[in-house]
Amino acid sequence: MACSQAFINSFFFFFLFLLQSSTIITTTSQQYTIGVNYGTVADNLPPPSQVAEFLQTQTTIDRIKLFDANPDILTAFANTNIFVTVSVANGDILQLTKLPFAKSWISTNILPYYPQTKINRISVGNEIIHTHDKNLIAHLLPAMKSLHSALQLANITDIQVSTPHSLGILSLSEPPSLGRFRRGYDKVIFSPILQFHRDTKSPFMINPYPYFGFSDKTLNYALFKENSGVFDKKTGITYTNMFDAQLDAVYSAMKRLGYGDVDIVVAETGWPSIGEANQPAVNLENAVSYNGNLVKHVNSGIGTPLMPGRKFETYIFSLFNENLKPGLTDEKNFGLFNPDLTPVYDVGVLRNGKAGGPSTSPAPSESDNMWCVPKSGASEVLLQANIDYVCSHGIDCTAIQDGGPCYEPNTIMSHAAFAMNAYYQTEGRDDFNCDFANTGMVITSDPSYGICKYVS
Image 1: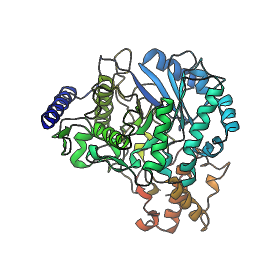
Image 2: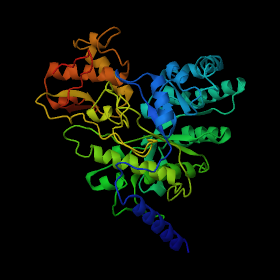
Image 3: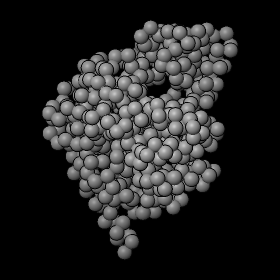
Image 4: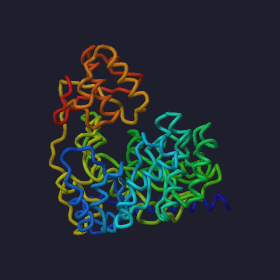
């Protein structure tokens, strides 16, 4: 009987997949609700007041997630009826374990705007486990508990506290039914975090990116396009898209610890529309296919094979293309909208149902020049070590010091990109001079921006 039910479940999801993926979305009259990550690593974005009015009047986007607690944005979104998730910087986590600091943080970043601005969640840091910083990891849950206590003391009961995780928290994700957390982190780190979520009725936030997990053979599987599926022998289920498989792997890990009842929120996911010349899977058509079918899928209420009937709160990365983001071209082009608020493409969130057409920006071309930058997802601990090494070995790093042309954005990733490239250009353009313990890669698209010029 169990085998029969597994076959039925597998057939049911495969049939629904065929219905959903029979056409690639370009424009659509169907409107969906979805969340977006509102990043601001750019020098050409419209003012927050204009963004708030645009989202409220021209789109069906009903929630945003910030990577900080930007006061201008929080002010602009007052009385828009759009939910807002604010974020705590990784660097504030240690101090937030102390209740007085947590109360001060709430007083500064929440109370002046709430409830006119519908702040519904505080995201404590971003992918802390992925940093491999044991001190930060150890203080993550105490900081979350401290903020929750500070909210209660302020008589605020409808703002949740959580933290987003990359899929790097899993030691095993295939097949999905065997998903498990990394050994040593499961019972020591994740059981207490999941207990906190159960106690406070807050969600476990994850950042599933099929974009970072596909191969040439699994591209259609990652894009929600028609494919032969991936069979899970343990359950007898055939998965028809990688997104469901990634969510079910996380669910299996949670259930293994006894927390299958805790809600899951998709804090980030997306697909870029422009990439490097050697990234053929990064194009407008694939971005439309992934994000468009994703929006349909999470709005359908179908759920996943192991979580049928669930409708996942989901945030696409990202709202805008961000021209100052460090790294490759794809990192700057995850946006649904251009800075002038015209759509890069429509995934069914425009109220008038009309897409403004694809971006007219020319695709990057190959160049004889080469630059060294960090790999996407490289550990900040390792990147900081790269900066320290380069700047202590005779390389001029004044450009990334306070007041220098490349100081902003003041992030480890951005500063490491400049330092690693300076070393690569100075020491010679050999692959080993851009290895940096496997955290560097050579690109052919100039990463310079604004007044910050990368040596070539």
